[in-house]
Image (tube, one colour):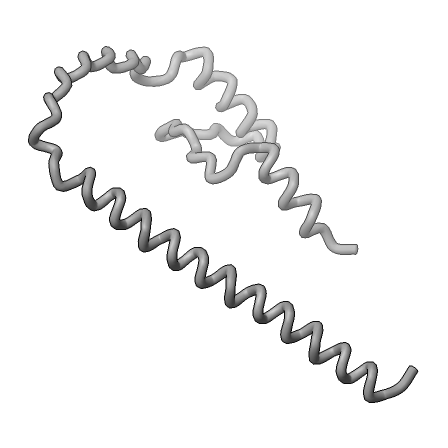
Length: 116
């Protein structure tokens, strides 16, 4: 192939791509301006619309306070088994850990960041 043809074809392709992008940007700008005008007319007259009655609030969920003795015993036994020591273990408080991510999310992160 001729070098002039390659250069011409490259610049023509770049020009077409950028021209299409500029046309898309202009179309989005025009659509945004039209939507602002349409929604601007509707928001100017909210006083005419009748107000809907407030929906009744749902009752708050009941949360059980504290932790059962059985749960404390199981957690104590697990901690003692993990430490593997003969001395007694004193548990001062038991709080639920905040889950920053769901388990499937953590599995994905672990899978994707594992060293090769």
